[in-house]
Image 1 (tube, rainbow, N blue to C red):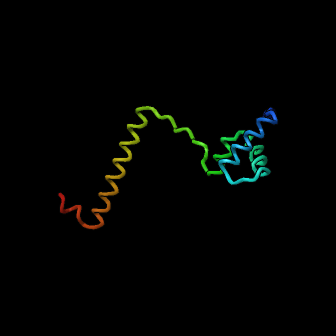
Image 2: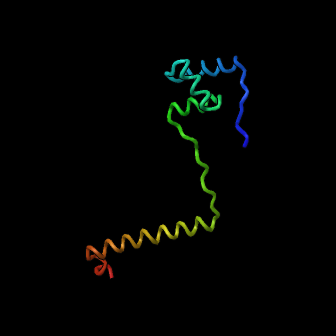
Image 3: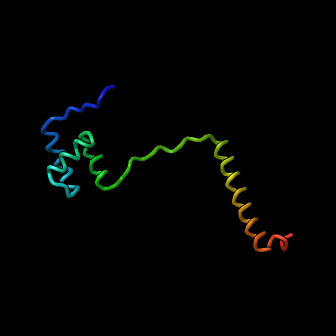
Amino acid sequence: MADKISLVETEQIDEKVQIILRQTDYTSEEAIAKLKEHNFDEIATIKAYLGIGKKSSPQVTSINQEIFKQIRYRLDSNMRDYHKRVEKGEAKQML
């Protein structure tokens, strides 16, 4: 099992800490700890501070899957509307 190891120069760490300090209200110790936590990625650290999650890639569907999904949705919504009209007694008036 390979661990993710990142090599970052000390000068780069100081620059990244300064970037984080400008964008957040972390102290320098907190910024260094969070930077280590996020594998020395200052963008990921700032996004975590702001509460921005990782984007999940949308599920790829074929055209046929999308067509049938829309048909099912339309039929389900029509049946829900029909059942509501039946409960209210309006369905017989339409016929």
